Length: 110
Image (cartoon, rainbow, N blue to C red; front, top):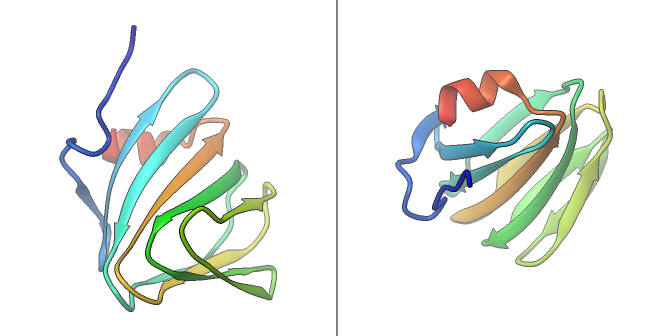
């Protein structure tokens, strides 16, 4: 059985203000991401489908120009190829799920 404790795992720098760890299987993966207040995830898109679940804190999520403020327990779906960006409004933790696996992130953070 493949396992990983995402809470206890070493968090590696993802970019300025963000630290993360990743865990993946054959067709899906999760990223556990800690965001410092004011952290901006620049607008980007990728060929993988994404689900983002806010575990703690508050974020501003912008998807194809539509803005939503999300808090604990709230989730958003990002279709493959959709442009999106995030701003941490306070210290936040999010769980991102990708399908298929984002090999770039899994290799960097896994």
